[in-house]
Length: 120
Length: 120
Image (cartoon, rainbow over all chains, first blue to last red; front, side):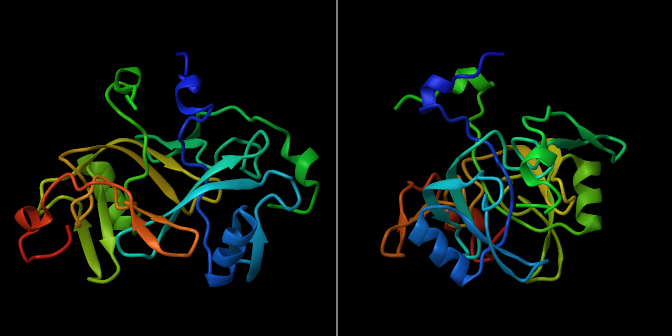
């Protein structure tokens, strides 16, 4: 299949990842134009790409009807957003038996990008 | 702008809504092939479209790297998923002043679909 990259300015819409923001993360995102999350596990702001350089440049922030979810339309800098080395974090399909099956190919070697520091 | 519907089998990828599932909701979704959420506000299962008929037919369920988020790729039956009458719940852009500005047109009259029963 040939993807119609030309039709959408080089972008193919896809869902890359889900993260959480608090009010400070949203303010930083708006101020810098690059996505900043709030890491619940580390209990602090988490600038996506601060280690890897794989930042998310904000094209548009959308708000849902309940005003409790933000959809960030972004340009993803680099070969992928996932700390496991994939373009999108949703690289597995839940199959009929309930098993998560990898359907995508890695786009980069995460150990070279992240070292032992873990997820950024 | 003419959208390239023909290129993707009639589907234009977009993010329609965000909801929550518990294990029962996921099991029901897998069993029925239509999306079932868990409503946190009503504390019960919520079959999307049970009032409106605007069900979400599951094409594929994807799991993220942390196995804590599901991406449901769906065929959305009907003119829209949003209880406010829009195709997607993300019908507003957050503008530079921090105001939520409606950028989409309604695709149906929600009061005719939902009556006074509220969101389904």
